[in-house]
Length: 309
Image 1 (tube, rainbow, N blue to C red):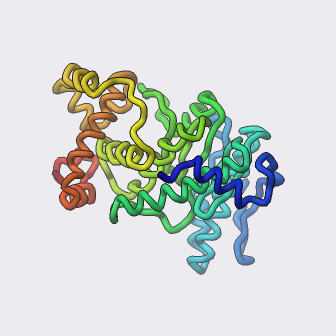
Image 2: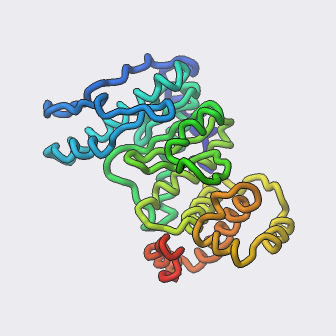
Image 3: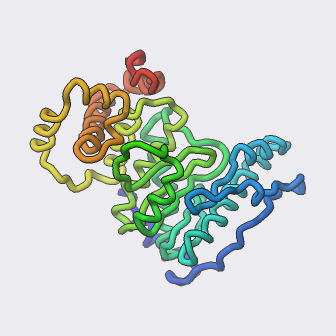
């Protein structure tokens, strides 16, 4: 199985830099320019929210559209993403650095060889998701996959708070795919084997983000892909115990909340059993792959997939 340990070993072998040595930290640019075309005043389109720089990506996209060539547009998007991440380093602290791979960018305090291994794992995972999803996965042409690994839960929740409504009940989270202007994945620093499933799960969300999927189907696909690529995680309950919890928990009202997605946002048993029910339903439906692929292509969150079914 392709995993971070294998990538870590390979990264150390091919690196010319000792495992603990970092490259100098790059300065955050105020201006982004491509091919001698009118530069974009990047810093003028940043505001601070919850202590972190947030970019007006609509303004970025409008500037990119003025560029004459697709190659220039792709380079401009990548430069703007790097610029945002370099600005993000300042409030995070001096221990954080930006690392770059073939198709990924990583902000973290990970040691250089671990960061390289993580980027390699992201690249390999993306290739496997695309192959396994057989036409359902889509990778945008512009920009790279971005992973932000934060040192602790407090920093993580401060960062993702910007993407939550001001009021409501929200379940605990260890990772998130965010697709507002600039697609990126956020998680909390942990041992490598704990990060692997989060990367696989959130990258799967990224690959099906172009589809208006109901939440139960979106999460079911992500959980099953996570398990397929990284193995079944240690269970808190036996299958029999989970079965009994499902029988006790799901009534008419709870099932309607499952279809609407509301049950996923509650804490405790509601959250746990919602993810597990989504996994079971998606796993069973996917056994007839042709029908399932057609269903996923037509499913809509507005009716929880009813018309497509």
